[in-house]
Length: 230
Image 1 (tube, one colour):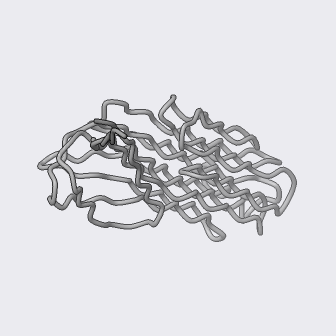
Image 2 (cartoon, one colour; image 1 turned 180 degrees about the vertical axis):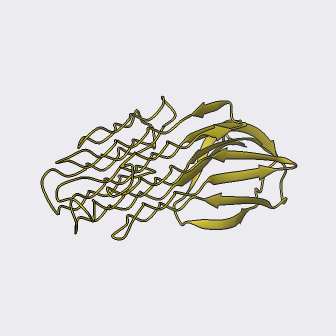
């Protein structure tokens, strides 16, 4: 007998169905979508918007039954804004029986005309590992907030600053996108997967998009080894 490791990854956002062909233990890794960055101030030149929060990471090992359909969703990154606050990232989820394993999306950053606060990082629930995403950086006069880093299997996401991006610990989570310095500058988009987007500065500086979420499923299959004697 021998063993082979199998994996299937999911990067297309939205809902779907996973139907295993084998009854065994599966390890499911989920990363939530990153939040989008907020627009710069429409009232004051140079004031920056907040960065989007990073997506969370949830890891769960659970037994799945062959030929049974399981519903999942891969989170969408929040849109950066040219007119206000950044959009929220959405959750990545996997449902087994009555339990939903969830890696939350990061919240969008607040625009520079408002409080300029960075978006909160996502949180995860029901996993064996539940790591939170980093908070987006707050905007200030002259700089916008960087996006929070997404969490990974190795730890929580780093918080953004102004204009620095939050780091990602790995595996699978991405760093945030940097904010901007100066007037009327756009933020930088979050990184693969789940990084929050940086905020924009000034009256025409746009916040950047958060990166989409992710799902990975891993399992081990048993196979027979035949030995032929000559």
